[in-house]
Amino acid sequence: MDLKSKIHTDRLPKHIAIIMDGNGRWAKQKGKLRVFGHEKGAKAVKQVVEGCAELDVKNLTLYAFSTENWNRPKLEVQTLMKLLISSLKKEIKTLHDNHIKLNAIGNLKALPTKVYNELLDVIEITKNNSKRTLTLALSYGSREELTNAVKQISIKVKNNIISPEKIDELIINQHLYTQNLPDVDLLIRTGGEQRISNFLLWQIAYTELYFTNVFWPDFTKQHLYDAIINYQKRERRFGKTSEQLS
Ligand code: FPP
Image 1: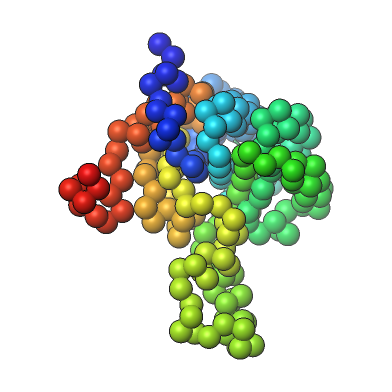
Image 2: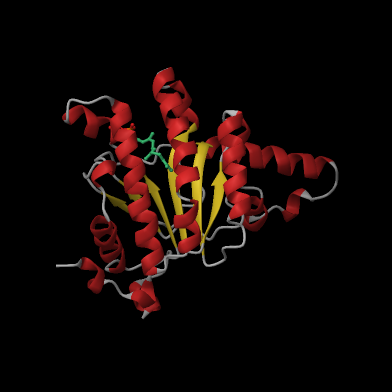
């Protein structure tokens, strides 16, 4: 049965974020190199991007490469970077067809020049697609993002642009890479681990977490629907009581 029909379209998450984990283990299970898992993983990305667009989920954020991932074997890092360039080039039509604007968060300057330039090109090419946003977290680490925000705010305090008493959640939000995105409603992690791995620590304060054992390369639209159905069964109280909500 297609799970899509079970989704309440009036209560969709506005922002889904995904930790795409399990590429390496998926490949190993098949007796293949880890990079094969990443290649298959890129195909799963396309499925999920299209799945979110079909449902009209406005914001999708994918953890594609963390600050810690730079420590992986050189060949794996190189393959991931090549895969990024080829996927970006290949999927411009998918982005246009689905009215998706590309966005990126992270320490983008740390990316190889070719990747950085391709990324900026596709961001520019898709900037007028106004229905949906796909954000790639690249060379992203939440602690790095927060450290960076603290530095920027400190400089503004030093230059009398902000007074310390005026610093509030809104100001902190405005200094994060995600400043233009709404809070995450649903965070999905594939691959069986139940941790956050330095992803959007500030932004997930009230996010619903969904963990699945499915390895990312096997993740399909049906798995996405499953996660959304599970999300829609939850009561989001944001610190209030059930009675207050009803
Ligand atoms: C985690 O699996 C996955 C990554 C570090 C990279 C994610 C990249 C892709 C899905 C492909 C390209 C992305 C785009 C946006 C086109 P892992 O290698 O940590 O798996 P393991 O935990 O089984 O070792």
